[in-house]
Amino acid sequence: MSAEPRINDRIRVPEVRLVGPNGEQVGIVPIAKALELARESDLDLVEVAPTARPPVAKLMDYGKFKYESAMKAREARKNQAHTVIKEIKLRPKIDPHDYETKKGHVVRFLKAGDKVKVTIMFRGREQSRPELGYRLLQRLADDVEELGFVESRPKLDGRNMIMVIGPHKKKAARGQETAGTV
Image 1 (tube, rainbow, N blue to C red):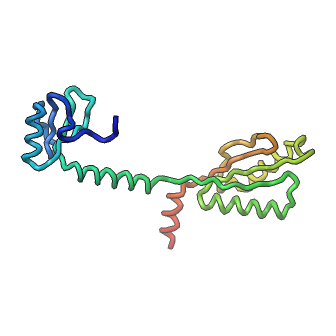
Image 2 (image 1 turned 30 degrees about the vertical axis):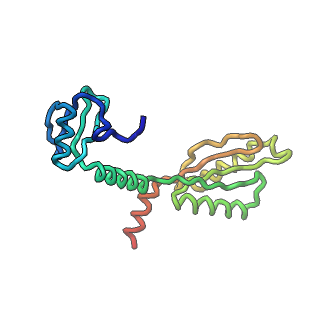
Image 3 (image 1 turned 90 degrees about the vertical axis):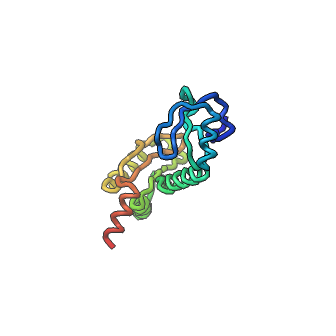
């Protein structure tokens, strides 16, 4: 069955509960009379509630209705929040300067409103010391605590340890704040 509502001659029931073009209740009428009323007022008979007993049909301009519903759907998609996950990769034996650089990237991503997936890659003997990676991830989480929170705790996944940090503020709220300060 299609998602499109049945209109005019496609409605195959003996009678319908008719709703007028301005939303007023006309009552239960035979389908032939409903189609005649639709032709007289130069509108379409659209089945709006096919599962009701009897089905509910409304007199409306179907083309205009389809256009308006398409515009509403487009507007809803435009206002939808897009979550972006950025990834940063580290090693357990990272140099202090390299750590600060990577931390700067995480800070930049969180300020932009994106989530950050922090991955620590273990190689060779490092795999026997996962606590080093855990401490490094905890240190990073503590360093960026004012910008974001830990969404998923550090967990070992094969040779990697993964943690996800999400921003505190929503992207939309941040955009409005910056617009007001200009």
